[in-house]
Image (cartoon, rainbow, N blue to C red; front, top):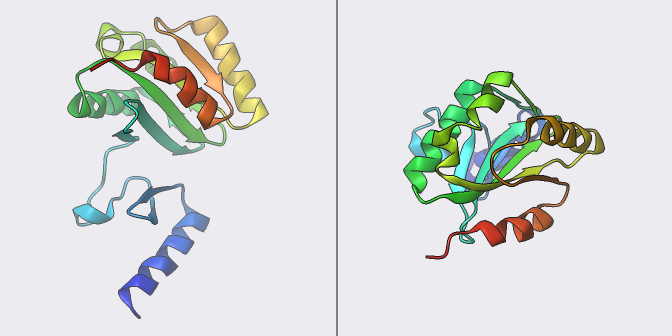
Length: 162
């Protein structure tokens, strides 16, 4: 089989069977990266957009625990030590542990975070996010959105002027 066709067939399979992210135009499962010899990649997937907004993708139906949020912070600091707005994405129902929520309010996280937009594409997820924001009230501006374009528009006001 031609390598491009193998990759295409694998990506179709992974899109059906696993939560995916895109790298170089090919869908691959979270935790794997094609460019590093198929070694495990950090979770969540974190990158800095050209617009100055840091993005965290937790994949499908994630349960954000202390280890995941600590990994996100390590990646954030490795990418940029400048405080930045953060777009948090997850497909389906996103849940988190109390330890992860507490850690999100620590001085270490606050030092590199100017604002957070939570992408909540489903009605039930938006309701859960609004309840979280009502009772937890993070120490930085934080809002839930159902459209990524709206979240980015809101976060742009928190991008540092360089």
